[in-house]
Length: 617
Image 1: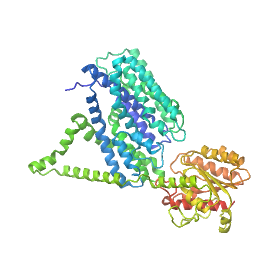
Image 2: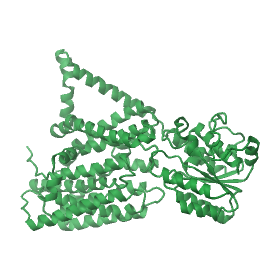
Image 3: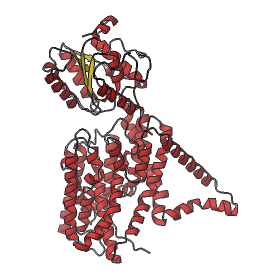
Image 4: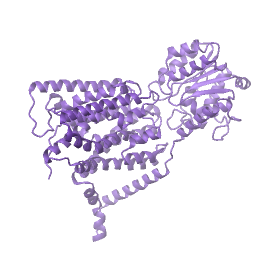
């Protein structure tokens, strides 16, 4: 029988803070832009706890029981995660809306604890707000599990030649090396590789391990002595400062900026270490974090983390864009209830009784039915039938899941067209899928001015035209380039305003602009009104300019971007507004599942709106 381990109730409060930050970030990133830092708090806490447990076991048994450690980790993590993956896979069939796109790779990555590397290999962006993978959040569990697999052996071998303090120094240096690797591999266009790589994001776990090896006093050490009142005061002050630093980070540091990768997340990990140490001692801060509600949430934080993301994805795909925050909030609350059930019926039995024994106990009614011909209870029959349906549904979902969503396929087709056909590309004005052109009619005054006659529209279509934009332009490219044979388009998925403006300026410097310049931006971030005003007044002076009004419902930057584009169009006589926002608002059947990018019919509407604005030039 194993001895009862010492506990530090305040650490459950740290778990609660961490998971609440992550959930808030996923529900409302505009309000909590740096809430992803909660994952790094988890990393530091995990590194500290795992290393402490290993050291305590080694002190008690005089050796490292690596198989026993790995078995305990499997009991703790595998059953709940496997249940979530199976249920979520089955639910993709019910929810639809391309939530099952790429599911095979996601499930395989989740079950093998390599989700982070699958995301890198598949080219998924962590910050994809349009159609994010439903199991996207398992990247962090992949890093943790890979650490759990390697770290015990590294620790055992390292302590054969180094003292604990020197080992702590070595881990500190490795943490710095990991943070440097994150900075070196940071790509401003998409930081996913730097963020989800084990090599570039393991520093939080190493900081926690170094803290455990440092010899700092805490309640989890057997026979630890009580610290002095002065030490408690100092730990409370540093822990509170660490907590405030983490919360401040969560409120002000977006994921897509350079700050997290240039040392910001490392600094947050150091602040988390101070928070963890204060919470692992009898301090005033630990008493606050040990409050009942926080401990309850902290004990179920693993289940909350597992369930909150897929439920938020499902809810926001089904709800109207204007209700996305409310839908995400309700989904997050539902994840707490699901996590509580998982904790009671799955996690705790598996941890205390073992996976094999628990599964045998669950199956015992079936054995009694076969051996003794006893009639099983109705509740057991219902649960078993439900489990069978879910399992079959999950298998069907994985087996039939497309590799790409319809939107991803559309963007890929648009990118290929832009890359291979800079000039005239299609002979007819039909869609890429062969459908007939112009089935969707635009409002009479979609450009903000009276639309021109059809013959003027046809005449204007012959003008040499340059277009610059982001993924919305990419999605509309096949129809747009078919309708405007002299169009040359430059667009990239993920481009911000500054990327689009930079491309316009480079083309202007080369003398490569057409008589008419179309600019479509604002899908991925705010439009800089002052810079756009300078752009159309200087580089685009003497040319007709078409500015597309962005449509990104539910995004915090839609209102300022829309205002910027409309104001610049109104202030310059040579600028026309292409009111894509006004044309597509309230017409969700013309949009892809993310409710931002046009589908085939929406692309025809986009093209018609551009042609009407062009006719008025």
